[in-house]
Image 1 (cartoon, rainbow, N blue to C red):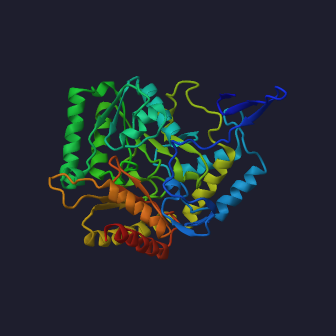
Image 2 (image 1 turned 180 degrees about the vertical axis):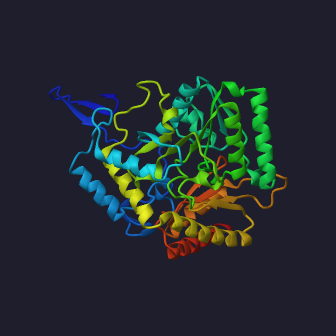
Image 3 (image 1 turned 90 degrees about the vertical axis):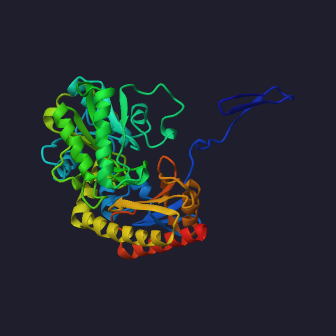
Length: 446
């Protein structure tokens, strides 16, 4: 008997014939589900499992199903497009949905950001952004900030500091990446202004001691850290980055993969810093309600500095995904979902703050719009820096399943539970989610 890569050959001793039996394929054991749920169908804020239970979904595919599951207008747009053309490779032939999506994005992009390149995933868009920045400036170095998440492909993982699990085990990583502190006020035991001053001083020290500004192509930051713990970036810090970028001729890249498209209660998360305009904006996740499409956007003058052949891809700007994106942007505008995200987000954060007042193991509640992070600590530990309690966060996340509520954890230390409702979530659903989350916390922490 021989076995090669899933094929097992059995030889019969009677007639020397060989029967081939192929091993049944399975998903990679490296893939770990956060919940045991198998989906039968989903609508709005609800996932209906094959187990007959209905779950309030506060994960939304990690912030992807912005208009809720299977919004009728998004479904109809995708179905109609499937009957016209599914794949029109956009460097071979152009298709109407991509032109319409570009026009629609032009209505919501910051002033002066008027040129768009499309890819499939956030990681691809991140890599396209740093490629453009390096080509445009002729400089090698990229500065990122502690706790940022920018993807799992090699270059994107090299830029990611939200946890070693994203970058360990396949070194060497991409060179030219340097990390500066993020103003994580709670962790440092500082108020926000002090944390911002500290982080900007350390950035200046990095420029003086390790990374010359005139060797630096770009600074890359999320307006709200995603996997890094759902930490809003203080507007004063973003303003400080913009000032230094302008002073040194550095490209400021804002990664709106998770925080964009209305999730924070503004269309783009960086808009909390009044007047800030990035040089490159990255978007993905919620832009098409679950269909895989991503983009970078920049001024035409900057985008034109990309070298010939440096932008492309077989599936980038897929016609069905683009049609879903057009419908998604229309739904967000016509159903006032950005305003809903702000209002429901205020409701969510207020309810979580009330819960934290009676649960000492909840050290911090923070977020913007429908991005809420609950940081669990050991309340009995001594020291000026909070002691992370990843075990409590994991137990609460699992206890939520018993309450028919789906949540996720995040943070470099794994001690943050994040709540990411759809932009269509109702006030009643937020109240229900808060009650279920509170019951899960009580079941674990009593």
